[in-house]
Length: 344
Image 1 (cartoon, rainbow, N blue to C red):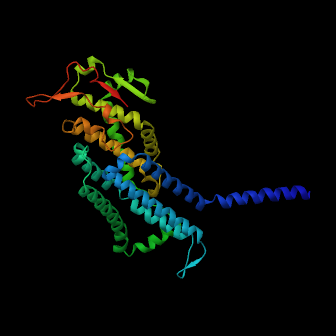
Image 2 (cartoon, rainbow, N blue to C red; image 1 turned 180 degrees about the vertical axis):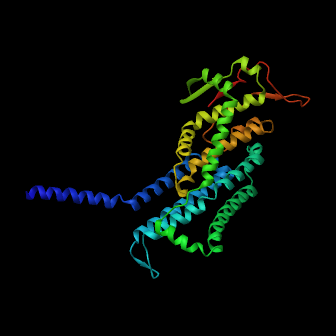
Image 3 (cartoon, helix red, strand yellow; image 1 turned 60 degrees about the vertical axis):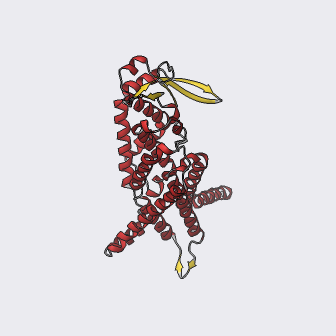
């Protein structure tokens, strides 16, 4: 009986040990560290995105995630100790998450629109290296975004003293802000992708039918082309939009399905998690594809390979065309057998 009792005691002690190691606080540290590591890994592997405003913002976001992780780690290490006359506890971790989440929750729309404006103005001139003035403008804009978000979050609380009681209640319950901007932006992008897919359905179906997977320079390449009948019956703008949509869908279809699932089930992700570098990489490809289609006639062919996007291969989506001498418009090159080729 004693042996059985001791074995049960050992099992209980082991369970208590694992419960103490994998509690909510340590799990939070694991999640924050994983997000921080993923952000840094993508920024190191996909450096071409760093030549744009959204790339500079991703760098600043990674630094903020590092700051959040370090602060939560320090509070966890000095828990139950007195620092500057204040006892550190779990409520300080909750306060850090609430502050960072509130700041993160108001940055989606401003970053999206400013990045779109940046691509609309600068995408045709990307073969030229970014000037020092533009780099300083990116840094100033990113700092302005963060300062504006911080001032907005703390300004609301300071302008309404009666909210202090509510804030204390949220701190006691540890309720983390959820970004509505992220939800609305995801819905807007998903609806745009759905409408464009429906509009280009005949061309996409033609491309899917001709889909081939080949090996080129030790890499797997997806190759597809339009039928001649489809090319002759559709305008140039629709051909280009179809190619851009196909390239975007081939690259980001898993992420689109993930976003669709999150939107449909309306999963309440905290704001300090849903603002991340992978999400901005998706936004980056969406904005480049939209601006590329809108300003295709103004973008030289050598600029396409310089797009700050390491995910979508936009250089294989263009149509080989020359401008007519009377500037009437764009016509396909005669005898060019590769004018309708799309590789992603």
